[in-house]
Length: 167
Image: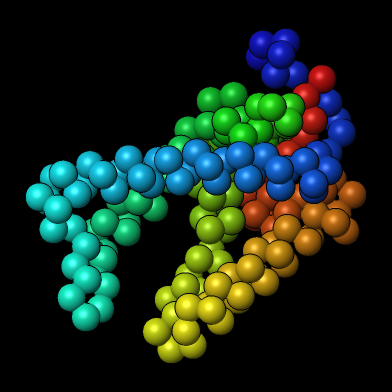
């Protein structure tokens, strides 16, 4: 492992990982925009229909999810850092300090994204309520880190990973 990626035994404070997540959200928005543009070009601008009700094809939603998942999984597998983690000098590791396996990375991203399923309730409860439920779920996911001595969030527990500070 290169010296610049050596981790300490210190867990990452929650505020630091949330700021890194904000950076990563900017990357995710860019990825989603590029995939959206390519899909619009491939379908001759007929990807999303908005006559009366917005209709987004399921294949497009799955493609967007797969591309975003690929960004996180490949980043964690290749050095343990996403673009957003680099300036904050933090890294995802296995419990023993090594690079997360493919299985751990997949579990981590799926558990972290699980609250997005709440958006399926939007037709029944409205967008406003669905977004509030999503925010509450993610707050709960990360609030666990406030009480864990190693500052692990719910997805870290599920995947046996943690975020550590770099030396």
